[in-house]
Amino acid sequence: MGKFEQIQHKISSHEDMAQRVQEWKQSGEKVVFTNGCFDILHEGHVTYLAKAADFGSKLIIAINTDASVKRQGKGEERPINPESSRALILASLSFVDGVVFFDEDTPVSVIELLKPDVLVKGADYDANEEDASSKKYIVGRETILANGGEVKTVALVEGFSTTNIVKKLKS
Image (cartoon, rainbow, N blue to C red; front, side, top):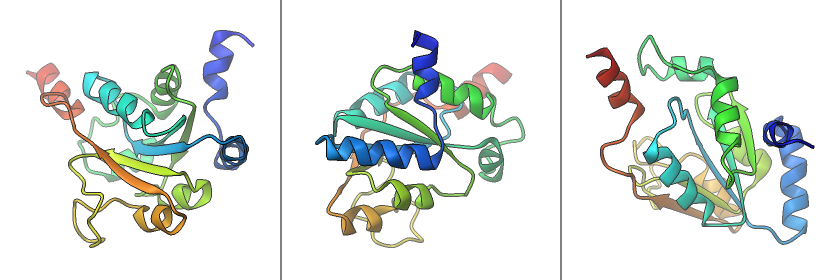
């Protein structure tokens, strides 16, 4: 399998990813999960994802579909890059083992299906927040904890955001 095919192979359906996760866990791998839009990949994203990957041996990223991004109200122009491009770019990172899409407003159904060992979000969230109505609440937290897993946060790199990049390009 060539390099491009290896990258494409990392992008899969929920069902195929669930099978991979089961196989990885049977082999003793520790599966880490995170999610986001990852519209214009920048230093903050790469740093965050690499640090998330350090919590285990396999990293899965669930990315919002284009329709899901639109519903987030980030602006008419978002997403800048279509979901297929965002997935391919993320899958090309050496420390990323799988990429799936989610069309819902949250990735809770994907988390419930995959049952990763570790759920990771940026430090603008709080791993201990129990109030689901709080902006700091991490969706999927209960599923992870109920299965004996961990919920972690990673410090964000100051000065990097897709929103700021878009503003800079417009000015």
